[in-house]
Image (cartoon, rainbow, N blue to C red; front, side, top):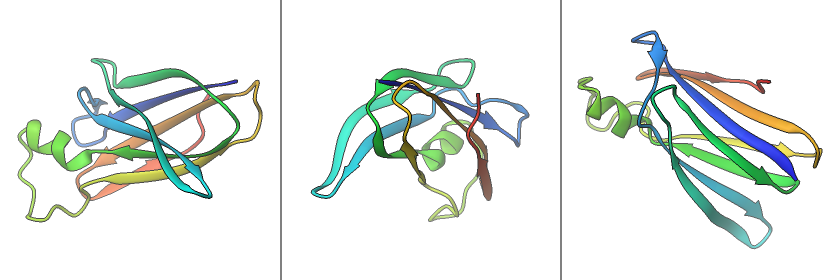
Length: 112
């Protein structure tokens, strides 16, 4: 099975985003299957799971994170939940999904 991890960086503060809740779902023809809920640690990292090849969805609870950090957000926030869908093709691969996060923008890529 492939190795999965994620890392969230708060680009407003310029530091790891600690305490971000991340839901992992497996996407199948029959619908979404919730696999696990993770929370990023002090280094902004979470994961270490072994995942089978297939399609997945990560939901990062950005609005909750920024509210807890004391950032004043509009109601509703511009970005409340950031959803990233990605695929795992190589069962022996490493799939690292970093998220660079701010209240009004985000960026992601396949990391190493």
